[in-house]
Amino acid sequence: MDVAVHQLKIAAAIAVLRSRPAGVDVREYTQQLCAEYLKAQTKWRTCYLQAKDALVHLQQQQIICSIRQRQDEYSVPAETADVICPVSPPSSTPGTDTSVAGPAVPVVNSQQALTSSYHFIHSVVNLARAVRVQTESSKADNPEEAGTRASTLHSQTNLESLLAETVPTCVRHLKIVISQGHAEVSTNCVIQGLDGLILLLNSDWTDGVDGACLRPQLLKELGGLVDCLLQRLFEPGEDDIIQCVPRRQLLHKMLLHLTTNMRALEKYSLLQSLAVHAQNLCHIVNDKSTTNPSFYECLVIALDCIQQGVSSLKVGELHSESLRELQVEMEGLLDSNLMCRFPLVAGAILRLTSVMELCAKTEVLY
Image (cartoon, rainbow, N blue to C red):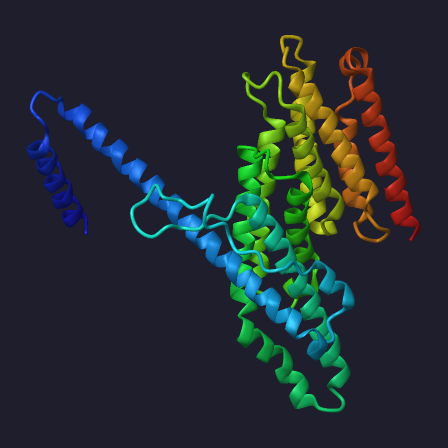
């Protein structure tokens, strides 16, 4: 294999030398070829992702229509019908991509992708819950029929594979909103995308046999999304002294939604990451040479998310020792310099540690 690669490199070098225009430096010509290749790769990757998004979107709508038709058969709860959106095909005129040769590719924008993913996941989770309840109730009367009902539904609709495609699609569009920002994507739509992922993570679907392969993928995708969100929000660059307020508020809402709605295990992991960022930000704002106000704002956001996340814990959901570990980390942020220069931040930390101590005591009592 190494010999073949070496020969291929020699052949490529000879081809570059022979095709080089007269008067053009070899290095310059090679860099030009590499730039053109990367540009073409980016263009085709964009085209591929647009086609994939359109396909996933149409498959989601097909399953949603199928679920609407099966509501009576599977006794789907009435509230499910309220969240099933009508079929909305991807835009084929204003958003069509014509930058690449070949047939036009219908474009699914981030708002469509996030909304469709949310309704699809919500419908599937409710349907799975209804099928499970109906299966359990009919086991005594007809065990054979009860055992094949869910498997027949899954084989006909291929829910697992489409859910496996929906999760990365939804996460990718959320990352686009985080990294680039899109004014046309509403805050409610972004929160809907997060709700869909959280609903799938918290549902019984990912705990059973059906979600055995889906859950690791979901946790991996969510981990990447959280890392992207934390990096964008808590690591502002030097050119980020004045950030767009609506954008900062959107990222704050996204993080707050995750910390207050995830299950205890994932929530505790996120709270630990927030505590690390809070420690780093405290060191930065304590540095008198720091003039970037974004660091101060980020520290306030981190403390608010930690407090809201801890307050949202239910009794018995998290062990008291875990809370005490977080409390010790937060108490370590308090020093005389911080309390003198930033009394409001010091007060927020004190309130946070008080909430943690109260929650830990409540856990011990129960």
